[in-house]
Image (cartoon, rainbow over all chains, first blue to last red; front, side, top):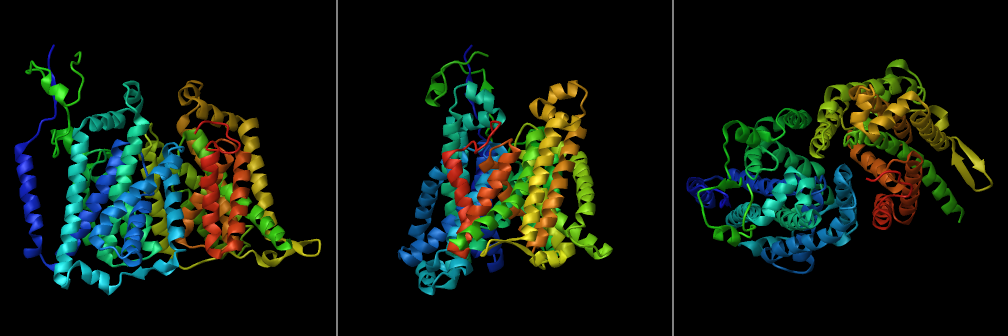
Length: 349
Length: 289
């Protein structure tokens, strides 16, 4: 029987996204300074959480050491601008490339550890990076350093323009991460990743080179995470080993966002970021009790609704914000479309 | 030269402590394939429990072990029955994230109720006593006691695992959960006993740690990492391996600290990564990771 495997795409959803993005691009003209800062921070977290989601939710690589790449990107940015004299806008993508290059040998070591031990191993790597960073006296050693005024001014002459530029950078990066991720997941690599997410053994026995795909995802994630780290600390203008490699800020919160929203779903981090920032804006004054509440919520979600808010909505109502589910369409007689997607010619039903 | 002998002895003795961190971690991984991210924070919790016991009963910190061990064991049993048994599943994610959440709760709970102040347990005059070995080398009495206790704890665990009924239950469950259940073992109970035992070891380690150095609510994760490194260096599944792993880590840190104070932790991590590169299964591995 002839049929076609296709991912339905929704024009309405795409139009809503486009309208929302347009509104966010012009936000500097309708939002206040504080709002812009908060929104930039949300974009940073959206990017970090999406990247972690790809790593843990799809490739099954549960890392609790992604702060290694946030800090690495941040430190490389400061090194590239202060020591090598590069313009910050040139430096940010270079930080991503350097992060990806570092990720290759790191993966070589970490992939020797299985499952849980991989997680703690990545944490050790982050600690190693932090300790090395605090040995570099040219970048302030253990106490950190501020970005010199000349570099700050080189981004844009006025403070207002700088803030707008930083906002657009954060928005661009988050959008880029999301678009790249959706494109990846709709490709045949995405099919392999989704298969791996659902059942690694079955994926392997269907001929997917799982180790290679995991390596690709790990390196790509490092590329993105290092760039986000560079942008975050370009916003902060000050760096120290303790802040750049903070496990709470760059891993615990990121995991919280992904798990609450729905791990293994593209729209999970989108929802998670909104929930996380809503909680933070209302409860952060409670200090350590606020963090205990976050820990408690994360545990409760893992026990009661392990697929998060989006997973629960999808199971219950069939809602899917970003259509990625492949559906079989029997109404098609030709195989040509499948061939162009890189899928095998025919499937036996 | 004499300096270096002293440093290496110090490192070996600290290694005993790391081996205890590792033994608790290794035990529960062996029995239920759970890596407890909150392990380090539970060590710190044990130190605080000891602090409370010392303050209320007015006893020596080392004597408080008698109380802290059963308290932590009960906490461990309860934690497993109420929370962690539900977290166990085939995927890596849920146990990892649940213990990660637990770690954050314990850390911030301690911060809330015990403040961020640095504390220390008092063990009396024994803290500064030492045993001279020859003219220039001396071993501190307290570090020596810690090391001997660590060896004793690991020997005890080894005996328990291989020569007692409960040890047989642990090993059976580790080998095949379903078959163990068919043979009449209640996995939930076996797991809870394993966690109780793990936290009993954690209790001893926590008190000894707190007598040795200052502690505050934030130091847990670093202890988890030391224990983890000792497990991997020694090889999964080998209790005596964890002792060797702990000693290697302790010596590496002591030598690193001698070269440059900033290198103490880095040297330990680098030795761990080096061993992972050269011998990923660890030195005395019994099981496939």
